[in-house]
Amino acid sequence: MTELSERFDTALRRLDALHAEDPRRELVDGQEVPQELLYAERMSTWLAQVEPDASEALRLAVRAQHLQRWRVPRSDYPQDRSGYLTWRRDLGRIQAEWAARVLEEVGYDAPLCEHVARMIRKEQLRHDADTQAMEDTACLVFLEHYFADFSSEHDEEKLIRILRKTWRKMSPRGQELVATIPMTPDAQRLVHKALS
Image 1 (cartoon, one colour):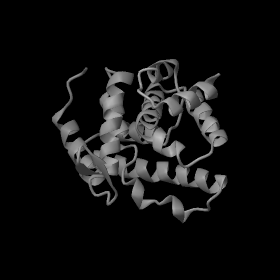
Image 2 (cartoon, helix red, strand yellow):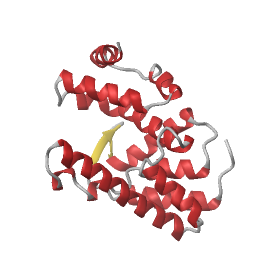
Image 3 (tube, rainbow, N blue to C red):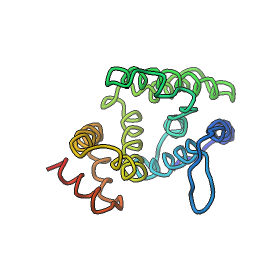
Image 4 (cartoon, one colour):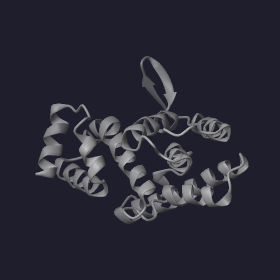
Protein backbone atom coordinates (compact mmCIF):
# COMPACT_ATOMS: atom_id res chain seq x y z
CA MET A 1 0.00 0.00 0.00
CA THR A 2 1.47 3.34 -0.99
CA GLU A 3 1.79 6.14 1.52
CA LEU A 4 -0.97 8.65 0.93
CA SER A 5 -0.65 12.40 1.15
CA GLU A 6 -2.04 14.94 3.58
CA ARG A 7 -4.00 16.28 0.59
CA PHE A 8 -5.59 12.83 0.23
CA ASP A 9 -6.67 12.90 3.89
CA THR A 10 -8.15 16.37 3.38
CA ALA A 11 -10.02 15.21 0.26
CA LEU A 12 -11.38 12.19 2.12
CA ARG A 13 -12.62 14.38 4.97
CA ARG A 14 -14.32 16.73 2.49
CA LEU A 15 -15.96 13.85 0.60
CA ASP A 16 -17.09 12.16 3.81
CA ALA A 17 -18.54 15.43 5.11
CA LEU A 18 -20.65 15.60 1.93
CA HIS A 19 -21.69 11.95 2.36
CA ALA A 20 -22.67 12.69 5.96
CA GLU A 21 -25.25 15.22 4.72
CA ASP A 22 -27.36 12.30 3.45
CA PRO A 23 -30.69 12.59 5.31
CA ARG A 24 -31.31 8.86 4.84
CA ARG A 25 -30.01 6.72 7.70
CA GLU A 26 -29.13 3.07 8.18
CA LEU A 27 -28.87 1.33 11.52
CA VAL A 28 -25.44 -0.25 12.07
CA ASP A 29 -24.47 -1.76 15.42
CA GLY A 30 -27.21 0.24 17.13
CA GLN A 31 -26.17 3.57 15.59
CA GLU A 32 -27.78 5.51 12.78
CA VAL A 33 -25.30 6.25 10.00
CA PRO A 34 -25.84 8.35 6.83
CA GLN A 35 -26.43 5.82 4.05
CA GLU A 36 -23.94 7.25 1.57
CA LEU A 37 -21.20 7.62 4.18
CA LEU A 38 -21.68 3.95 5.04
CA TYR A 39 -21.61 3.04 1.34
CA ALA A 40 -18.37 5.02 0.81
CA GLU A 41 -16.71 3.28 3.77
CA ARG A 42 -17.83 -0.11 2.45
CA MET A 43 -16.37 0.75 -0.96
CA SER A 44 -13.00 1.63 0.57
CA THR A 45 -13.00 -1.58 2.62
CA TRP A 46 -13.65 -3.75 -0.44
CA LEU A 47 -11.14 -1.87 -2.58
CA ALA A 48 -8.41 -2.94 -0.15
CA GLN A 49 -9.16 -6.53 -1.20
CA VAL A 50 -9.74 -5.88 -4.89
CA GLU A 51 -6.61 -3.75 -5.35
CA PRO A 52 -4.39 -3.50 -2.25
CA ASP A 53 -1.95 -1.22 -4.08
CA ALA A 54 -4.63 1.07 -5.50
CA SER A 55 -3.51 4.45 -6.76
CA GLU A 56 -4.52 7.61 -4.94
CA ALA A 57 -6.86 8.45 -7.83
CA LEU A 58 -8.63 5.08 -7.59
CA ARG A 59 -9.02 5.40 -3.81
CA LEU A 60 -10.57 8.84 -4.27
CA ALA A 61 -12.89 7.69 -7.06
CA VAL A 62 -14.11 4.74 -5.00
CA ARG A 63 -14.82 7.01 -2.04
CA ALA A 64 -16.63 9.56 -4.23
CA GLN A 65 -18.62 7.21 -6.46
CA HIS A 66 -22.03 7.93 -4.86
CA LEU A 67 -21.29 11.53 -3.95
CA GLN A 68 -24.58 13.11 -2.83
CA ARG A 69 -26.56 10.53 -4.78
CA TRP A 70 -29.77 11.39 -2.92
CA ARG A 71 -29.80 14.85 -4.57
CA VAL A 72 -30.64 13.23 -7.94
CA PRO A 73 -33.62 11.02 -7.03
CA ARG A 74 -34.61 8.12 -9.25
CA SER A 75 -38.23 9.28 -8.85
CA ASP A 76 -37.45 12.40 -10.95
CA TYR A 77 -37.13 10.16 -14.03
CA PRO A 78 -39.62 7.95 -15.89
CA GLN A 79 -40.09 4.61 -14.13
CA ASP A 80 -39.06 2.49 -17.11
CA ARG A 81 -35.76 1.08 -18.35
CA SER A 82 -35.02 4.15 -20.47
CA GLY A 83 -35.67 6.42 -17.48
CA TYR A 84 -33.39 4.27 -15.32
CA LEU A 85 -30.54 4.39 -17.84
CA THR A 86 -30.91 8.16 -18.24
CA TRP A 87 -30.86 8.59 -14.45
CA ARG A 88 -27.71 6.45 -14.12
CA ARG A 89 -25.94 8.39 -16.89
CA ASP A 90 -26.93 11.77 -15.46
CA LEU A 91 -25.98 10.65 -11.96
CA GLY A 92 -22.51 9.54 -13.09
CA ARG A 93 -21.89 12.81 -14.91
CA ILE A 94 -23.07 14.98 -12.01
CA GLN A 95 -21.20 13.00 -9.35
CA ALA A 96 -18.04 13.10 -11.46
CA GLU A 97 -18.30 16.90 -11.71
CA TRP A 98 -18.88 17.28 -7.96
CA ALA A 99 -15.98 14.97 -7.08
CA ALA A 100 -13.59 16.70 -9.49
CA ARG A 101 -14.54 20.07 -7.98
CA VAL A 102 -13.77 18.86 -4.43
CA LEU A 103 -10.43 17.42 -5.53
CA GLU A 104 -9.50 20.58 -7.40
CA GLU A 105 -10.37 22.68 -4.33
CA VAL A 106 -7.97 20.66 -2.15
CA GLY A 107 -5.14 21.03 -4.66
CA TYR A 108 -5.19 18.06 -7.05
CA ASP A 109 -4.14 18.78 -10.63
CA ALA A 110 -6.49 18.64 -13.61
CA PRO A 111 -5.26 15.27 -14.99
CA LEU A 112 -5.93 13.47 -11.69
CA CYS A 113 -9.32 15.17 -11.29
CA GLU A 114 -10.30 14.11 -14.81
CA HIS A 115 -9.07 10.54 -14.24
CA VAL A 116 -11.25 10.31 -11.12
CA ALA A 117 -14.20 11.78 -13.05
CA ARG A 118 -13.74 9.23 -15.86
CA MET A 119 -13.79 6.38 -13.33
CA ILE A 120 -16.96 7.70 -11.71
CA ARG A 121 -18.57 7.95 -15.17
CA LYS A 122 -17.35 4.35 -15.72
CA GLU A 123 -15.61 5.22 -18.96
CA GLN A 124 -13.29 2.64 -20.49
CA LEU A 125 -14.70 -0.19 -18.37
CA ARG A 126 -12.71 -3.35 -19.20
CA HIS A 127 -9.99 -1.21 -20.85
CA ASP A 128 -8.87 0.90 -17.87
CA ALA A 129 -7.61 -1.13 -14.89
CA ASP A 130 -8.67 1.50 -12.34
CA THR A 131 -12.21 1.80 -13.73
CA GLN A 132 -12.52 -1.99 -13.74
CA ALA A 133 -11.28 -2.20 -10.14
CA MET A 134 -13.87 0.37 -9.13
CA GLU A 135 -16.62 -1.59 -10.90
CA ASP A 136 -15.52 -4.82 -9.20
CA THR A 137 -15.59 -3.02 -5.86
CA ALA A 138 -19.10 -1.65 -6.45
CA CYS A 139 -20.37 -5.11 -7.49
CA LEU A 140 -18.88 -6.73 -4.38
CA VAL A 141 -20.37 -4.08 -2.10
CA PHE A 142 -23.76 -4.62 -3.73
CA LEU A 143 -23.58 -8.39 -3.36
CA GLU A 144 -22.40 -8.32 0.26
CA HIS A 145 -24.47 -5.50 1.69
CA TYR A 146 -27.47 -4.76 -0.54
CA PHE A 147 -28.43 -7.82 -2.55
CA ALA A 148 -30.40 -9.59 0.22
CA ASP A 149 -32.71 -6.60 0.78
CA PHE A 150 -32.89 -5.92 -2.96
CA SER A 151 -33.92 -9.53 -3.62
CA SER A 152 -36.96 -9.20 -1.34
CA GLU A 153 -38.32 -6.46 -3.64
CA HIS A 154 -38.03 -8.24 -7.01
CA ASP A 155 -39.07 -11.48 -8.63
CA GLU A 156 -36.59 -14.29 -9.20
CA GLU A 157 -36.39 -13.84 -12.97
CA LYS A 158 -35.36 -10.19 -12.61
CA LEU A 159 -32.85 -11.05 -9.87
CA ILE A 160 -31.20 -13.69 -12.04
CA ARG A 161 -30.92 -11.20 -14.92
CA ILE A 162 -29.31 -8.64 -12.56
CA LEU A 163 -26.90 -11.20 -11.12
CA ARG A 164 -25.82 -12.25 -14.62
CA LYS A 165 -25.25 -8.63 -15.66
CA THR A 166 -23.32 -7.97 -12.46
CA TRP A 167 -21.14 -11.03 -13.05
CA ARG A 168 -20.38 -10.02 -16.65
CA LYS A 169 -19.25 -6.55 -15.53
CA MET A 170 -16.67 -8.02 -13.17
CA SER A 171 -13.08 -9.02 -13.85
CA PRO A 172 -11.90 -12.57 -13.05
CA ARG A 173 -10.37 -11.19 -9.81
CA GLY A 174 -13.69 -9.64 -8.79
CA GLN A 175 -15.55 -12.84 -9.64
CA GLU A 176 -13.08 -14.81 -7.53
CA LEU A 177 -13.77 -12.56 -4.52
CA VAL A 178 -17.53 -13.22 -4.70
CA ALA A 179 -16.83 -16.61 -3.10
CA THR A 180 -15.60 -14.84 0.06
CA ILE A 181 -18.96 -13.10 0.68
CA PRO A 182 -21.16 -14.67 3.35
CA MET A 183 -24.65 -15.05 1.87
CA THR A 184 -28.01 -16.31 3.03
CA PRO A 185 -29.05 -19.70 1.61
CA ASP A 186 -31.62 -17.93 -0.63
CA ALA A 187 -28.99 -15.54 -2.01
CA GLN A 188 -26.55 -18.43 -2.57
CA ARG A 189 -29.25 -20.35 -4.45
CA LEU A 190 -29.99 -17.36 -6.69
CA VAL A 191 -26.31 -16.75 -7.42
CA HIS A 192 -25.77 -20.44 -8.21
CA LYS A 193 -28.81 -20.48 -10.49
CA ALA A 194 -27.75 -17.27 -12.27
CA LEU A 195 -24.24 -18.55 -12.92
CA SER A 196 -25.05 -22.13 -13.88
